[in-house]
Length: 182
Image (spheres, helix red, strand yellow):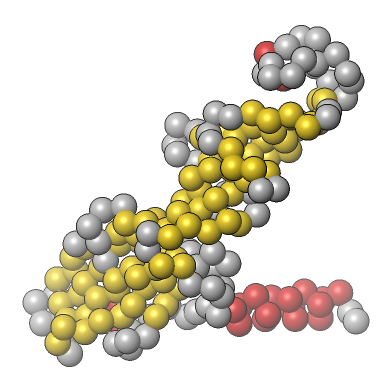
């Protein structure tokens, strides 16, 4: 197969998995739409007033993927995720812990297996990532931060970044030409 055909084919497959998201005033009442891991339901209070309301999360971020209800958790690759209400009308899909096999690691926790050290890190922005440091010699002591040891220089570092999604209710009143978020 020609490499260009392969790229075009892959692009078509990826695009076919994504919803075409209409503006809220053009959405179909009762239909669900997926935007960045958040599942929205289109509702119509009247023919001229429509809303997108977040009703759950999608761990795979695929239209036909598993739907996760609000208040539930999901074990994904490297992270335990929560689908929860952030404010009264907003929903978040966020990592709450790192996962190493079946071991749950709170942010700030470190774990060492042979010459590999794992750290669950939460940044000031609230992002959670799993840091994997492969120590390239045997002189590093367990439970010490590899970053702060001169004798533990010589390491390979790899980060696994978590998925994230956020959505809030959006209502459009076409009669009064108003857009509001709740």
